[in-house]
Length: 205
Image (cartoon, rainbow, N blue to C red):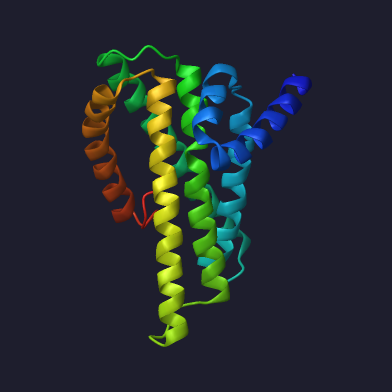
């Protein structure tokens, strides 16, 4: 088991670089050789972000409040991942998907990497350059750069989600549109509920 865990770490490191440089080829490899142990390393990235976010968003350094906020974020993200995979699996199978649940779980897990990167960056910027931000030239340049960065990560996220459905469930383009048209609104409603609960102001999908 230790050997599998270490091997999964090597795969995770290689795939982490691959989904940036060669996402298409990397996702084919993830689907074919993906190991569920790789999800442990993805969870570790999530835990790092939640730890930082808990410190940033908690007004005072109080262990109880920090722990509570940390557990809420982790629990909510775990629930979101489970709901997303379940919806994609059930609806994907309904429209004729031929992939396996393991493939879907691992490949969808990697779509969280852009999400974590965006949330991590916003938390770091909150520390370095807290609001309110001015309308000066420097402030406008910062806003433009942040918008470009966010748009790039969003496009990357969409690409990885597409590759998950394409290879993880082996769906063609039409079926991907159908699954997206059904799952998208459901996740949107779920995200609104999360927002009203005060957990995530931006969907952590």
